[in-house]
Amino acid sequence: RYWLDLTSSDIFWNTSDTGWAKSAWSSIFSPWIQGACVFVHKMPHFNPSIVFESLSRFPITVFCSPPTAYRMFVQHKLSSYTFKSLRHCVSAGEPINPDVMEEWKAQTGLDIHEGYGQTETVLICGNFKGMKIKPGSM
Image (cartoon, rainbow, N blue to C red; front, side, top):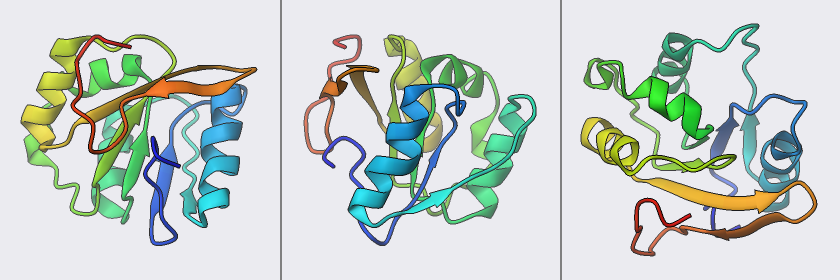
C-alpha cells in the first residue's frame, strides 16, 4: 500500500515478466487490494520505445520496472516524451545505481522509490512516498 502508493483512481503498470512472483504481487494482488486499475501491455521483447510510447499515450499514474530497465531508459532522451499522468515510480529486483536514479529524476522530474523483498516475503522494506530517499541504500 505505502510503497506503490496506489489509490482507486490509479492506473498501475508493472513491466515484470509474468513468470516472476513480482508480477503476481505487483500486477494483481497489490493493485486489486487498493482498487487500482492494472495496465497490461504485451511486449514479446522488452523495448524501451514501446514503454515510453505507452507511458505517453495511456493515463498510467504509477509505474514499476526493474533497475535493468531503468538503466536502459536513461540512455534515451526522455525529454522528447511527455508522461502527463505519471506521478509515482518504483523499482525492485536488484539494486539500482544512484546515478540512474538521479538521471531518471533529471529527465522526468520523478523519483524512483526502490523496494526490497523476496518471493516468500514480498516487500520487506522500501523507500515510501514522503520519505527522504537515500540512493544506494537498498
